[in-house]
Length: 335
Ligand SMILES: Cc1cc2nc3c(=O)[nH]c(=O)nc-3n(C[C@H](O)[C@H](O)[C@H](O)COP(=O)(O)OP(=O)(O)OC[C@H]3O[C@@H](n4cnc5c(N)ncnc54)[C@H](O)[C@@H]3O)c2cc1C
Image 1 (cartoon, rainbow, N blue to C red):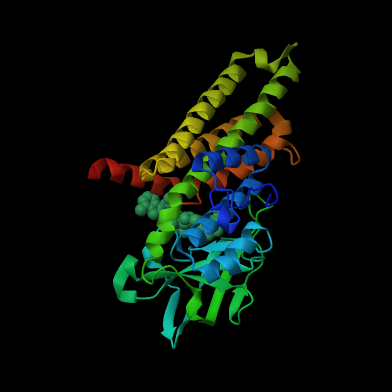
Image 2 (image 1 turned 90 degrees about the vertical axis):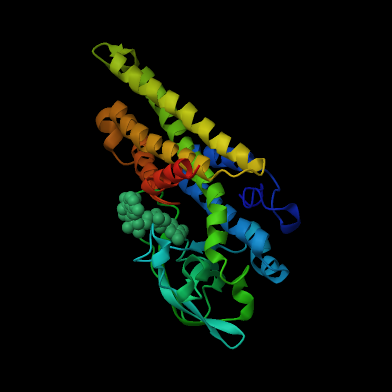
């Protein structure tokens, strides 16, 4: 993927990225997920971390982490979530306390992509407990630094080729150069990349629906019951029609949010709409895809069974769909 420019799609060419726009990123995410969502998932993770490093990293950080990441010489992680801080990041407990020129990091992050195998992680930690969202900062932390502990990979329902695990920090000595961007701006920096992140997850969900539709159209043509192809039954046709309709709508929502970002416009509500609609569609229609396949759809090794399991997490990560609806509603009520 790195060789063909799929790591750091929007990252500037001078850092080793492809320098493409968000629309291109959305198209890549959709196409990868049409094949296998786990692969798209890794592309999306690299895009998020690369964006943070390209926009906020020092020249030394870009040389040490960004270039090797985009060449697939290093693996990254993006670590926000904790046991008590999921949707509500204001409950963050991980702390980084000043220690000489550097910092001491303590805490634990949960369900972090690539945690068991990453070379480095961008970690959100509290640097000023009294300052709320303005008291959080991001650090680049290498997995081999003393005190960093990576847990084993969790057994996930879907997207099983993309692993997650815990990252623990026990009195980790961070050099001054580990701070990414400005102290106290970490929360805003993380949120700043999430619009693109949500466009990416929306596109990934679109790819899952596209794959489900392709499988179902093929199956509906060849599977015969009552002397007919099952595609001749109206009940099956309506499931296929709804799948195609929502696939088109989801793709347009994703491309609309991407286009706004490409024009430099704010797209927070539109990215939430795209992510929410596309992931709800992916869960609903992969369930129908299993239905169209009947009993065979429930058996491991059949594509639609995997698509059904791969779809569910798209409603949860990058902010649950309840949180997306809150963001959309807030944008309406604040206007
Ligand atoms: C496979 C996987 C990969 C992940 N990868 C990463 C990663 O790489 N990095 C990372 O930092 N995190 C990662 N996460 C964490 C993920 O982002 C969180 O699981 C997600 O944000 C939800 O947090 P939570 O699980 O604590 O749920 P909770 O916040 O406890 O929510 C539980 C339920 O309550 C609802 N809820 C919560 N608050 C509200 C509210 N105010 N209004 C209405 N409903 C509400 C939620 O929508 C949900 O239905 C990953 C998780 C998984 C499972």
